[in-house]
Length: 99
Image (cartoon, rainbow, N blue to C red; front, side, top):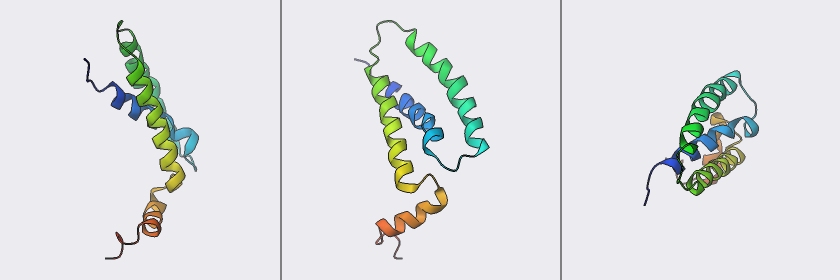
């Protein structure tokens, strides 16, 4: 039984991959971090991970899809902006922001 972190790492990878399609307005730092993290690091991780024969890829696919789903939910709820996050939370959870 393997209980590694492949699902978690691919979940983070999937979330980060989803920043470009879901976030608006898009900044140049988002594109730069995408290139550094997803293209270089993700490509290395993907190549090393899939060169291991006999490994079940279900955890990696599940983690990747859950990261994309979480990013979609996050950017749909908060609009991709950290500035509006507090306003949205105050509207949806007024008891937490009453004091």
